[in-house]
Structure formats: C-alpha cells, structure tokens
Image (cartoon, rainbow, N blue to C red; front, side, top):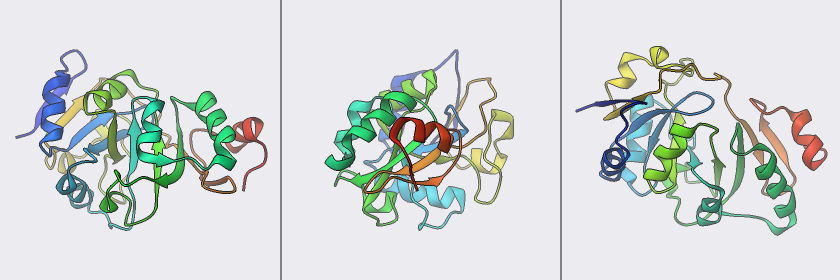
Length: 210
C-alpha cells in the first residue's frame, strides 16, 4: 500500500525500513523528482525499470548523502583524482553526476551490466536525509514514465507512476526542473550531458573537457 509522506511529517525510520524491505520511493531532489530503491535489493532495481516502462539498457545513478560514500561504491582513477576532488568540492551538493568505475557493491542490473556508475549528492536537505536514512546510497532515476517529461513538482507526477510505488514524498516545492550534468571522469574528462552545471563552469575548475 502506498504511503504518502509530507515534508512536515517525515518518518525517516519508517521510510528506511520500507526501502530495505524492497519498497520503491518517489522523492524530491534538487533537480527533479526521483524514483529510488535500495542498491542492495535486486528485485527493487528490476522493478524500477518495470515502473518506468524503461529499457534495462539505461543505467540508474547512485545518489549519495555524503561524499564519503563515493569510495564505497566507486573507484577513482589516480590520474584524475585531483580533478574529481575539485569537481566534488565546487559542485557537490548540486547538479553534477560524475561517472566512475564501479565497485562490486553496485549490482549489474543497476548499471545495465556495465562497469561504471554515476554518482551525485543532491542539493536538497530532505533528499539527503532520506538517502542517509537508507544507508547513504539510493539507486535513482527520474520519477516519470519513459518518454514523459521529468516532474519538477508533486503535481507533475503522473498518477500511473504514483500508483506503482510504495512511498511518495511531497515537499510542497517546485524544483529546478533541469536534470544534472553528466561528466565521465574514468579517463579523459568528457561531458555526456550538459544540464544544470554548464561546461563553462566545469572548465573553469578543471580545464578543457571533451
């Protein structure tokens, strides 16, 4: 049965327990509403693709509550460590997703059987508290049916997707509505998607990127 939590009535322990038991959660981030699941519950990750009507070739990202969790789930290339640390220092929490080589804790079905994982800390207090209560890491994607616009407010969430999950969190705010910028830092820095953080801002911090 779906549980609707509002920002003035959030039971983080209950949310944590439900997610650990396999529940999916729709929750606000700093960019758009996200659809999340525990990285440790394989059936939940499979269910995200079903709920979104999304091909399993599209990987999920890992939203973190703190930068300390990066080393738990990803490998930082020593050649790029300084640049990655600069990106984290300047743009986290915020709208920058960094692609890194994944560690074994990240299950194959979360990343389309790939060897990498996208990581980010959202600039949203409620989001960070939710993620922290769920162990500091939530596999996440935008909370929309594939092909539909990404929702930047509770009112923009489709009834179809809300009816398919166990937890919905409403923070009564309108979000930025611009998805995160994605940069691959596994070798030569390369922007895969320019979103909330512009290329110009990134190049001011780490120099030229592809």
